[in-house]
Amino acid sequence: MTRVTNRQLYIIGLITIILISTIYYMYFKEAEAGAMPTKIKHLSKFALVAVVYGIGSYILKKIFAGWMMALWHLVYISTIIILLAIGFYYWWQGAATIDIKRSANTLYEFLISPVLYVAMGIVHYRIVRHRLT
Image 1 (cartoon, rainbow, N blue to C red):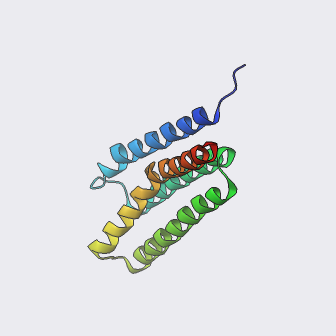
Image 2 (cartoon, helix red, strand yellow):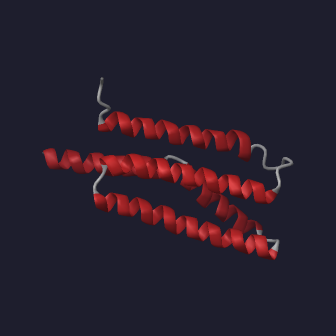
Image 3 (cartoon, helix red, strand yellow):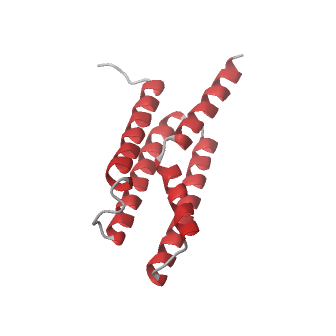
């Protein structure tokens, strides 16, 4: 039985996050003007964020140092809190300005994209490489 290396585990996580991001762009972003009710769309988007966060947390916990995991959690949880605050405001008030909606979409797309995951990988690689030299 072969053992999965940290590099292979990282790449598996990256591919999984890319697939989830692709699913969002194919089925939610393109169908935003579709017939899906807004509340269902919001819950689906929250579920996608939770899945990406869970995948990243699970895989990065096995590879990275504790302070990097703390940074991962800080960025995700604080951004999720901001999005939830915007979402609750939108649900209760029934309207939000286009700028608020765009800001929320930008934050959301950041969370489901592999950008933070890749940045964490680059920082980890640079630290490991620096220690070896």
